[in-house]
Amino acid sequence: MVIILVYVDDIILTGPNATQVVSKKKLFMDKWECCNLGECREFLCMRIEYRGGKTYLDQVPYLEKILKHFGMADAKAAQTPLPTSYKPEPFDGTAMAALRSQYQSVIGSLLYLMLGTHPDLAFAVTQMVKFTHIPLEEHLLKTRHILCYLAGTHKYTLVYDGRSDAGLYAYCDSSYGDDRSDADHRHRSTQGYYFSLANASVKWHSKMQTLISTSSTMAEYIALSDCAHDCASYSANLENPCHMSLSMLTAIE
Amino acid sequence: MLSLNVCLNCHHSTPDMLQGEHSMVMSHLDTLSKRGKVPEKTGTYTCPAPLQTPTDVENCLMQTAQCLFLIQDSRATLLRVTLVMLNQQWKGEHCGNICFQRQYLTTMNVRDWMTKDISKLSAKDQWAWHKAQFEELEALKKHNIYKLADLPPGHKAIKNCWVFDLKSDGRKKACLVAKGFSQIEGLDFDEIFSPVVQFESVHTILMLAALEKWKIEGLDVKSAFLYGTLDEELYMEQPQGFKVLGNEHKVLHLKKAIYGLKQAAHTWWHELD
Image 1 (tube, rainbow over the protein chains, first blue to last red):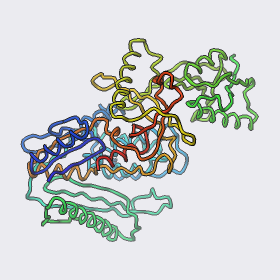
Image 2 (image 1 turned 90 degrees about the vertical axis):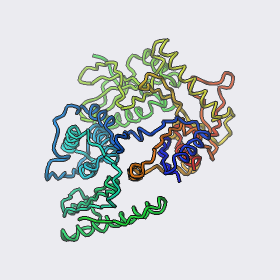
Image 3 (image 1 turned 180 degrees about the vertical axis):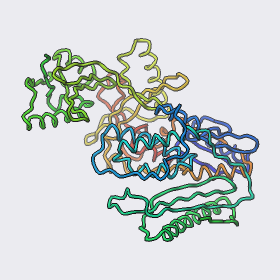
Image 4 (image 1 turned 135 degrees about the vertical axis):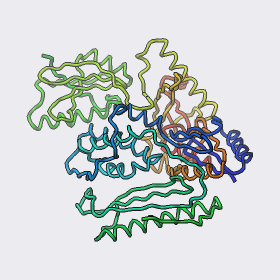
């Protein structure tokens, strides 16, 4: 079995049988003109490092470039991605075009970092993403706060240490009625989850709930149900092609 | 005080690249006249011949001295006078007097892509970029991308432009890009869906590899989009500055996708499949 990941022209091949992987790679190289990168060190601007039997995944070079680009390379580190109990207020007017394009460019970079290697940004970025079409100066300032946080934590990496004793753990939580970005000013709740498999972060997510809950318990249950759905589909996706059976499946609220 | 002449050339003689500016000027003038605030000396100027290249625009500028575009600033109070010429902009602010200053736009892109007007560079630099252009054309020829043909009636040729990139190691790369935005859905392209790997799959596979001590191999397909075979019958104009002598009126019949086409990613995915 060979597992192949393709992102347009970036390809990763891996599998249990090294000779099989190499022969598959050869097939690719015969059919299309390819650049052989050997052992994969970079994929989609994410740096992959192997040290002492562990795999490290980070976006440090990209992040440093971004911080420099937005002039935040020497920023004072912030402790949290967003100020505590900050609730962004929506804005109804028309936004300035210059501000909007600047905001979109920051948000785009932050989204990529969040999806790539920064589960810690999931909440902060999804909060700020909602204002991409009509940002305020205030919102831009808060994205700078996220950049300050990144300036302090830019050396953080995801570690895949190959510890097999831990199964799939899913952590989820929700707030209750804190989100006012809705067009009808209804109070919605925010939910988030984080999956860890074999002691490694594999999936994370944060979003506004589509249902309106009438109690914090209801909000929590909606979050838990969504989390369980994704857990089920995730483990099914894993089991089918990889023949991995997940005996330990723990959901923690 | 400089008199304010506004370039009001007819529609057909506005160069393509200035169409947007042109319509903005028109609508702005319309608003101004409704408010009774038409600039005192609004001269009308019609260009003798269609403006096609930056040189034409420049010549036109030389002749009329004040061939200007008026557009409104985002602050609404300030008038900006602009003439966009590929990568350059003449910019001035209208506050009683019109001053203009020549300014070069800088691209903020992280990867530093640029559409350069290489005719403004020194002969040596120009030659280096031309060499890059030749290399790109060679690559296209090698992949058997297109064939010279007459444009059949009922078809429209897609325009193209050159994009220049300075790689981090100093190599110069020119890329011929089709202007895919002029393609019409249903006629020039159909399906443009092209799936890519999800981040969670990447994380999961890296986790698996670490767990099972698998080796991870990387590959990078060179000019991937040039492998996708096109289903649609597409025609593209000959690349700017590289027309085949004696066959200038002919167009290129595209057999494979090139960068910039709407379906480029889709055809590559199809090929891979």
